[in-house]
Length: 132
Image (tube, rainbow, N blue to C red; front, side, top):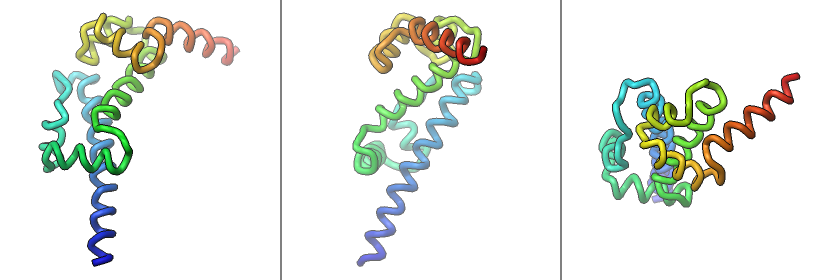
C-alpha cells in the first residue's frame, strides 16, 4: 500500500515537470513561428496523454495553482526576456506571442503591474547604468 502511495506522489511530480517542460518548448515553438498559436490546456493535457481534469487536479495539488497560472507566467517571462533582449517593438512582441497589442498590454500590466513599455524602459535603462 505504501509503495503505491509513493508511486502516485512520484507520478504527480513527473506530470508537473512534464507540463512545465511542455510549456517551455511550446512557448519557444510559438515564438520561433514553428507553431501558429498557443494550445488550450485541454490540448496540452491530450499531448501529455492525460484528461484535462486530471492534469488540472495534479497541477493544483502539486503547486496550489491552476495550470493556466503557469502558462500565463511563462508567457510573461518570455515577453520580459524579449522586451529586454530584442529591439522588437511591444506590438511586434505581442504579435509574436499571438496577442492583439492592446490585449497584450492589458495582460502584461495585470501580471507585472506596469505596461510592457514601462517595464522595458525601466529595466533597459537600469541595465545600461550597471554595465558602465
